[in-house]
Image (cartoon, rainbow, N blue to C red; front, side, top):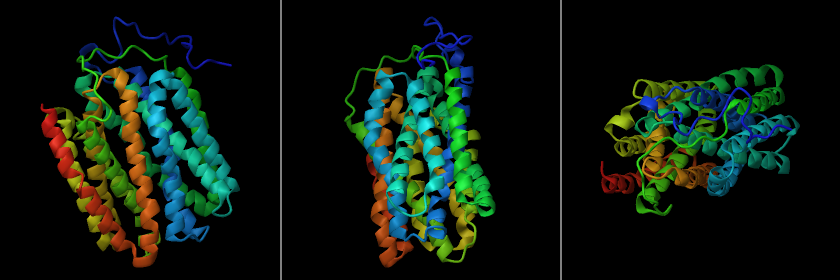
Length: 402
């Protein structure tokens, strides 16, 4: 059995005298590209389940409440496990955590072929997917932060998110027609095989290097006021994205739409633009300032969705992509940019845990609201909630200084 901590032949660990990512602020190292590829493979597998609401509605005849509970199950466990895995990422090999996440995702997707109703098996698989997501999300972010110069951290995190974000359009575009032609079991099993194959690629990443040289930040509490505002904003991003991804689809189907893939295309096209053309905006203007503006845009998009009609799916996707394309790298860089390398794992764990908690609570609590009073009320409530995070985050940015 190959140890995930042992250096692989032909890929010696970097010398402490020249940490990867440090020289000249270099970004595109071999390790960085490998992580991007693995993130994209995981994204293609995991993003196939962005169509889970359609699968539940069309195949299992689920109500909005059931859709919310099934979708939220993965996020509940991710929210609880996030802080724990954050500490694990610091103590264990990040490669081992990444490998475990990819294997877990693959196994869960393959097992979906046996699902025939909303029951214990379905919920168990969603819990496994939640653990897998937070393991991959945390480990890849910390691996990148340890290997990339701080002056390019926002750009590096942006491209990391982009490598998975692009799959939000690609995976549904492949999965939807594949499910129509061969069934959902084949579609989800294909996603599982991809994740398992990708897990083998983790072995090509050298063992954890010494972090790049950085400003010597004094230790701060994970409950520091600036970080608390960041965690709250992260939770609200989860609320916004959870509502948009979970309830836009059944709302559009209720209004007569036959396909919902256009929403994801608009979302991804816009987010890709933000993370390529405006890739260094957070590093140049200030990660905190960009995050505040993006959170405000997020609230506007969610509120506007209350007036959804099928032709607006693409435009709403574009607006959501613009907001999310800016806020993920900016908010992550703002959270990680002023803490020491030893604190990145725990901070990222709480950051991801709050995001997943926001996502989970929104879909769990607002599903019954949609069943009783309709989808528009759901988007109004969620949009107002997202708006409440703008002022605390703005104050945290002002307190942090330049």
